[in-house]
Length: 607
Image (tube, rainbow, N blue to C red; front, side, top):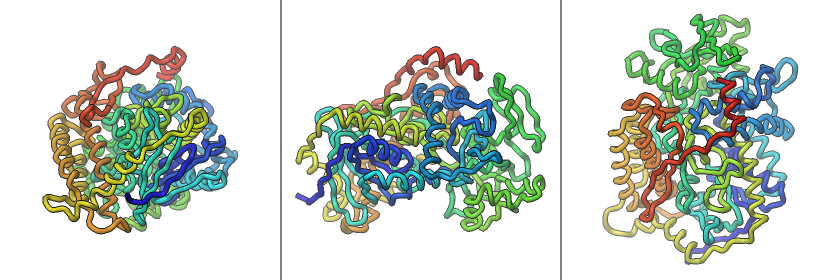
């Protein structure tokens, strides 16, 4: 039998982004022994790519803001498919999590009065995003890591988890390997928190880094956890489109929050065309004045570039398809124009958007203080994921919790910009707290040698096939074909026939993946890593397509060209996926529980 090292802890956290670090800090602070396992290096988490800020109704810039308005905005953005209890907890607790980060050493931008500064962002009624220039996620990770290293957490970097174990109905631990040397490890635990992020690498053009292959969703699904609302994938409106080597890299919404405008090749500011009726009571189309709208008793002054991301992304696609796009298949994003309005305009841009300035200067040879950026939609975020309880973040598998992007519920059909960072720390804390509670209330679980042996066999299978005769497949070509078909057939604009075609092709790729071969040894073998990722990518891709086929309407980030309108019959349920007896994906619809009366009143007042 292949050798492996065994570790025992009260709580295991898989993923070391904002949610994973906050969960580990909380569980450790409550007296549990904690193992933190991350696929990449500590500090390389995708959280650092969240640049614009974290949404929290602190009312530092506009005193009219409050948790009830933030709650209503989140529910409206999610088209009311949200887990309303999660939206309530998030809006209530986000300000405390911002202040907590500040107490732990985060250095936020300040107002003239010395308060934490907040900026406008798409879908938020008031300036709500606490920020550190355009590198807020990086500051969050730095702060959480600096605080977390003093908590006695055992960190395993560059480990990939390939399997979860159960003892009866409850979770019991996980199996992992070192990416560098290929050595195996068995982690035993009383509770596990999944914080592995999203699924963006299932698509060709994405802002997501290589780690985002749907690992947590697949690991949880394989031991019986349900997936929810997988059809809702957010395409960020602005990713870099040129040169090809940087295609998809995120251009923060903060550029638009600081005054950046979108224009087509003719210089027309197309976002003024067709503003959704939901938002208009009165409008002003002077580009200097921006766009004014009134919702209830709230009077907000905002450019149309800060509409919700799904709307902006589709408007950009319209321009490109009509032949009015930029030379490389996008549109223009212009922040340089503010130099005409501010005497220190160039210095202002560099001060407010330092990362964007350096990103375009170094990677594209573009000076954003003088030139327009070329941008286009990029696969960015998954609203769907592992189904969790709103109060505790526990899945339907006892002892298995999930938080952050890999968990579903908070964002409904579409996430508002800035809600992701506050989501991480609000629900990372809650998941860590309840995982700790579960661990203290339950005895150690047991993992059989047979289960470990099976995990070893499955993990080594791609390497073992290189000596076998017959039809074998390379992992990279399968991955590329999957990314191409998802981009073309299950992208921003969807059709039933195309999604059904995608499912059929995914099934063909699954059969080929069963024969995938990784050449070489376990040491320094990226082909082996890619071969093991394929299972996860294929599962989440099929889940997205199946749920997309079933939802015959357009809602939030899910846009059906064959069903362009909302349909009331789809307004009150979530899509739920479970595994059938033969391993197939089984889709059902689950009614959303009725909201409490006081929350209904809040939404009504904020309409």
